[in-house]
Image (tube, rainbow, N blue to C red; front, side, top):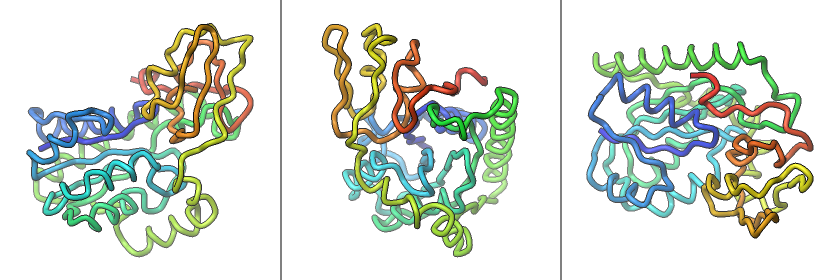
Length: 254
């Protein structure tokens, strides 16, 4: 058993860790950015893939990883865990279809409601208690799903025709195009707040952020994971909005 994940604020990583601990305590997990991820996929036939849904679609960085490792997925049995804040319809299904295209056998899917990573839009701000409750509920749900698998029952959330239709109508039709390419407009850095600590560059999964002295700049390969916005100790970075409303790294809720 192997865990593979991509995670912005830590939701998908944590959900995967909880799930694997209940299902197979010996199983290890690797981020898609890990240089050992490809080799680990080669060595395992049973894989759990966790990732955060964006607009009822697969983030660009995850799509690129699947395409890069396309030849490795043939015959692999994959269970998909999709983490999300807003209901996406077929979060697990959209990744499942991509994996099936390359020969994977999809064993099931699980949807987990977690704190929203979009930290700079007031509309997505939730009370701390609500976010914490969502995490606790997701932990219970992940543990139960793992116990079900031990009993031979695999959840199939997001894998049917109706969830696919809902995911398309509710989000992909309107916003899905945003995940087909990297966000190229760049981050907004408040120079009055930024202290040049470099944490944003250190956590960026695509290497899109650079720090030179006290100057922070970004390129055109942002996958909108919001890791930098939520990690900045000075709340000096925004992406889609203009003000950091609420940072939601998973460590706040566990």
